[in-house]
Length: 437
Image (cartoon, rainbow, N blue to C red; front, side):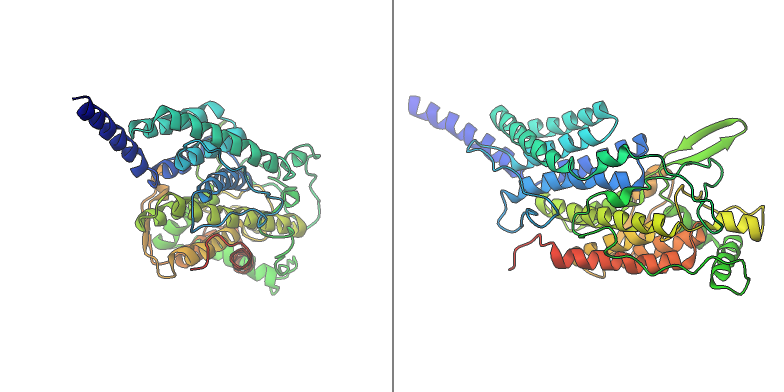
């Protein structure tokens, strides 16, 4: 009798153990984490460059923990600037999935304003693990390891010059004809003028992929600059329904300022980087990627976006280029307004063009060139689903949306895409995430 009782108890223990092990490769906690962190970033109104910083460090921490349990994927140790890797786990039994998710949120929580909301999101996801039968000891061991890793990663994060740039003097406008100036309706101050001082991840320096110089400023109606400005003006007045839909879909303005009489209020939207991180998640689900495969796709995309914004912002405050709205109002039509609200930083190059093209480049390497998907990212912001046959098609659409929207000249778009491709190609050449077959 005792023998049968022992076997019964032993079989229950084995089944319980098997139950939680079956959930180890489930990417759901990671997908939920990306969406929840994105929502917090929208609520906190982080600029596109700062948002890319939050996403990339959280994803690197999660990915590195998963690599400790993988024979297929490689650590980013020694591949990313200044990154010396993470501690090894103790010999205690842990869940690499739970530890990765916990580390993700420890990083995310540290880098956002709404820490309590981040903690609530983490607790909600931890409940998922407990519901899947993860033993208390495994949960505790995994949390401790996740905390150990996040503490290690945060030491590296703190060396990226972000804190130092918070202490720099407020940006002073260079009042010269042809230079950028704040635009209506908010006439807001310049966003992240010192972002080129942030440590890149794959790139060696912020100016490594400096784009060709834009056409010189000119009021001459036969000059390249004036022709480009007039193209923006003319296009904005003749948009068809398809072009208008494209402009709205890729708006991705984290802070749209509404004016209603004497009252001002903001409409919060997803950033360009967050949109592409969402696309990485959509593709991972379509391919039925497990946790580490999804983590690799997210992390690779985030690295491309992070370096893209550093490279782009480096040029923005070097060329200090005037926005179409400013020039057109002063020289062509004082009553003209762009379809999209002009963001508060210099025009050249187009951030969406650089970042989207870099992200599309690495996603194409992961999922293939002719990858069809339905992009439902903007549903939360009242926009319909758009279908694409490739990531490059989406990136091209995102880029040209800036001309349709009236916030960029064509050279900022085309040269920005060249810049983005160079960043993506460099990353794929120099950052290896999978072992050779």
